[in-house]
Length: 376
Ligand code: APR
Ligand code: ZN
Ligand code: ZN
Image 1 (tube, rainbow, N blue to C red):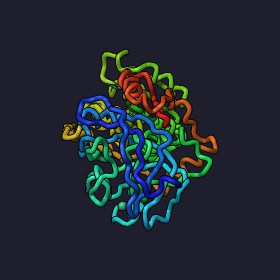
Image 2 (image 1 turned 180 degrees about the vertical axis):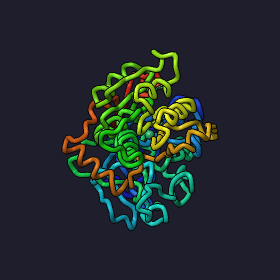
Image 3 (image 1 turned 90 degrees about the vertical axis):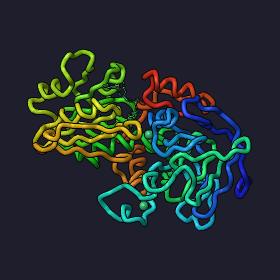
Image 4 (image 1 turned 120 degrees about the vertical axis):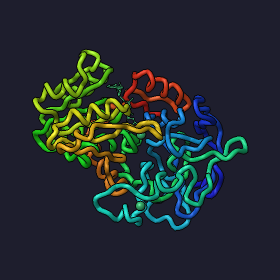
């Protein structure tokens, strides 16, 4: 490709400071170094976590930065030593890498890799430098993905190669929302056929939880959301009962316990509030109930619970991006989507040209969108 080995000038949405809207700028993107790939991003979803980043609530996000972590694209060029992908391959950019070498990657039970921001900075690439500059200033990466840029550079072990037929404008959702929600039901809770589930929050991530519970054969799926439009979507995707907390005086855990007799088998928190995290835990059956936390609290938050909730036998757990080993599993998940086993169309409510990125955030904040996909 004519651009290979050269600096590319392209558009990106830069977050210059906390609390400021994104600014669409011309940026320079340096070529990939050894072990890295440069990807032309084709489509990217807007996730609640990006909103957290803009508000300064995400740990380890260094400003100025280019956010975005739910993207798919085409490999433009590869650095020295890259063997698993080549120019022209379709890929999903992974906000959770899989280096394949660390002790966590080698553990078949875990999908966590030590090359994440919990262990080392993903605000710069592994050689501690950035590939982005704008107006002479260095711009940070975000989780190495930075999909709000027309071109981005990322380590080889943080991309998953897709089937050449994959529709990138849809499968970008496998970068976060879909994989996170669906996997929380399938891998983390391991929902059993005939079971009862409760999903607190049925937005972009919660709806895929509903889809996962349904695919696993749950016989009752209770969706809980303050937004009735989202509840209607949940019903279309398989929820059997839809409840709005504003229609009740009692706390949700009491309502759900009454509805089910002794609580649900599995509860999921997909909102990111302390009170709904506790309500989800208390909504599960005190004997064998499993509660999975997916929603994120602002960094540094603490939560306190009555230990009796756990003492009697409930399990409280969490997962990152649905527990999938990303490079191994995501291409298969995408293929099953292609075989029409998974319907993404109900999740993508808006498509906008990239320049309207701030409008996309407005839709998210106003509760009007499930997912807005930005197209370059
Ligand atoms: N009770 C019930 N539902 C609520 C409440 C509440 N108190 N507050 C908000 N909600 C609903 C919203 O109406 C919305 O439908 O929770 C849903 C959240 O969905 P989105 O805004 O689409 O956010 P999403 O991208 O799904 O992320 C949810 O998961 O990955 C994390 O960081 C992410 O914490 C966030 C959570
Ligand atoms: Zn690893
Ligand atoms: Zn996300």
